[in-house]
Amino acid sequence: MKNDNMKNQYRVNEQIRVREVRIVGEGGSTVVPTRQALDMAREQGVDLVEISPNANPPVCRLIDYSKFLYQQKKRQKEMKAKQVKVEVKEIRFGPQTDEHDYQFKLKHAKEFLEEGNKVRAYVFFRGRSILFKEQGEVLLLRFANDLEEVGKVEGMPSLEGKKMFLYLAPKKAGVAKKSQQARDREALEAEAKETAKQEQETQAPANGGLFANAKISADALKKLTESEDE
Image (spheres, rainbow, N blue to C red):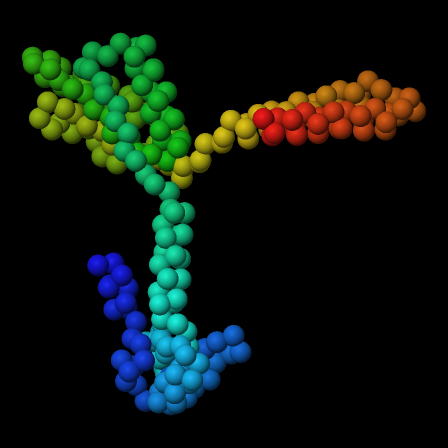
């Protein structure tokens, strides 16, 4: 179905009924009668594809239509892959959540928001605990206030059945987590730089300083290489 929709986006060959078109290619562009453009396409064994129908005259390319559709599909797929996928993470509270549990869930919510995800926090009222709905609202407002640096409130707490919801969105786009190997590499690089700095400060330049620093750099590089091989 998607392929049919994409095919219908463009007019091809005899579907192009205007008097003249602008042919664009690697060598530039030229305006020719549509009939002549169709003859050029047949001679080259390709199709006349209208890529900008609103231009005056419409802009066309001489290209294999199947190949053109494949390139368009591939480009859309790449653009979709680059988009940040936003997930909604849930955080559940009780109306009388203790401080330790609150801080634990606050930490997780902060991590979710920093990664670019939304957070849906809610207080679940079981049985007669619905009498404490004001207490639940205060808890959610405190939760939003504690996360104001990384999240923004999308709506005030609202009661839906036995649950009171609060929605938070990230203030900044999510940052992909670094792999363990990348973190180890950065740590080793920092360690190597610090070691070299300390050696420079303790050794006088006249006492083989250049040789000592070269040895430190070599050792650090060797250590980094061994880490990457692992």
